[in-house]
Structures are given as C-alpha cells and as structure tokens.
Length: 186
Image (cartoon, rainbow, N blue to C red; front, side, top):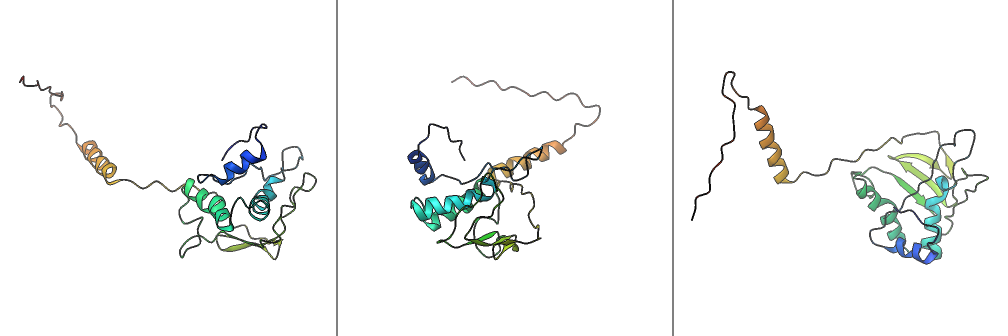
C-alpha cells in the first residue's frame, strides 16, 4: 500500500504495481459522507480499474498476477488465514470476472455504479452480486488478523515464565536476593 505523491508519473506507478511485494488496495470510503455527501467512486471501481487497465490494456500483470496482488498477498499481509486462495477448506470470497468486459463505471456523479464485467461475487460462499445485481445478503463481517505462529523457542520461554509466575515465596521467608558470582581469575 502506498500514497501516491502528485509528482509520481504513470510509469513510476506501473513500476510499483509490478514490484513483487506490491499489495493492492483502496483507501475509498464506502459509506456516504456526513452531511449528505457522496462516497468516492474508488469504493466501487478501484479493483475493476486495476483489472481493466493493468491486466487487459497495459499488460502490467497477468490474470494470475492480479489474483496474487489483489487477493493472495493482501490476505497473507493482514494474516487472514483461510482467505486469498481458492483451495479446499478456504473461505469462498470470489469475484467472477469477464476478462473482456471488466471496467469501472463509478463516477463522481454516480459513485455507487457497479463495475461492468463483474457478474457474480460471493462473500464467505454467499452470493452478494448475482448476474450483475446486488442481492440482499450481507454475509460480510469485520476480520481480525490471526495470531502469528509461535516458534518453539518462544513457546518454551513462555512455559518457563508461566512456571516462574506460579512460584510463591513461603510466608515468613527472608527476601530472595540474587547472588552474584565472582569470576575466577585465570
């Protein structure tokens, strides 16, 4: 994710998009702005624009690269286990895209206009867009990162600390002071 300074050229943006560590995203605000304003059109068009412009038109990505940049890598970066790949047992968050027709349609005048060429979308296996029309289903929910895996060394250190936390000094015992050892001279 990056902020694009106004001095960036289209070529520098394309170079960034081709970088192997690139993670696609959008800073669009999906809800209406307070006071009756409209959301930014990126809320409905950012990913269709990535696909139409950088896969189909400019060839910066293959379709496989697009899945990696827009799904697999973001899910890994944000530690969303079971998301971002299509494998047995994974959560079925899928967008079915027509590669020849995908295109962003949202504008400032109509910021909620759905992209063309994106006919079906499933969130957690539930259709939320079917034949290009929104359904009434709302299966989405906030996601939290999964805890990172714990190394065996850290697991052992935690066990040791837990055992020392269980140790209690018997009542009436003298305070425990660490002893210092003098190094033997050679």
